[in-house]
Length: 442
Image (cartoon, rainbow, N blue to C red; front, side, top):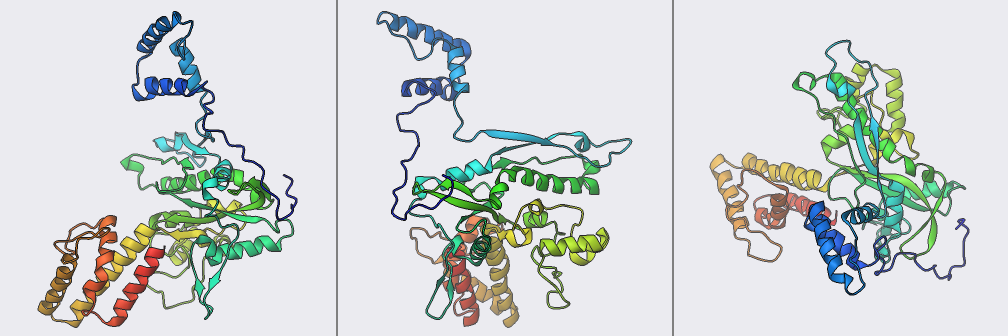
């Protein structure tokens, strides 16, 4: 347990998980089922529960037996002692600590903002030790290459970033031979585990556009994330020994991994102005002119030190008075960690808003208005002719629906490629084909 190496063929210690018949703190399954039915499923009143328990006790008295609970208070105490999974919820409160007005003080300046979270370190321990992942766990980053040295990407640990992080860890004598454990974050409901509920400040219409309110909302998010992730910080520089899915113990080094977010969230996390790139300093309208560099914590710190806030906003698209949550963590560059949200960036962004629009615009530019409409109608006809098949959705009216949902885009992607073939150059078809391959792999 002290992190010393063991012989390669050593068998793992036996797992310490609870058995299927362990109903702690309940004496047996009957006690649990009774409490679950009366309290959660039926939501019976305390008086009715006491009445049923007294009848139950009377019926068992002749057999010198007794019901699972003597009174409703006994049952409530048992429920209160039930562990909620393996990790309890914790909370902390944050407040505005800036300058407060002398009069007409907005309520958001005086409010307490509660953040509820679970210890991320224990969450990681539970995930990494889960035996269900035994045969689907990458213990080290890896790279696959074809005979012509083309890098083949398969999953997260096959990528360049994980590989570079492992190199950094291996170069440090204190962390050498440790397993790199990336902490992948996101703000959507389809995550693997729920980490926290963040506070969202609200105000009246009078102060909705107040610059101080906008700054506070942004900084509250970053301060909350920094506080929530704090238990992981010691393990980012000093190895920690934890159990893995194969029941062996290994040294690990944590690291803040990709943060999956759509563009508005990326702008908030990277502390940039809406409309600017979160990864480089190039303005959206002047991508091919001027000298632009990749954003980094070091570059941002230098800009903040040298320029005023107005210059940072106008010339670099940077919100200079917000401190990113990553600033206090090692090997954490928020501009490098941001990762695209598949639904908003790829499916709705690249496919719907860019590629489909690109095809339509090309047809309209290359053909007369009447001829272009005939071609677009033929594309709709081909889409509508898609056969009924498992996993395919039919579009009787083609792609002419007023409001596209994410499911609409996903379904249309499966039938769109053959519908445009012959109406656009082969190069456009190949570009669409390459995108679809990438999207399905992602």
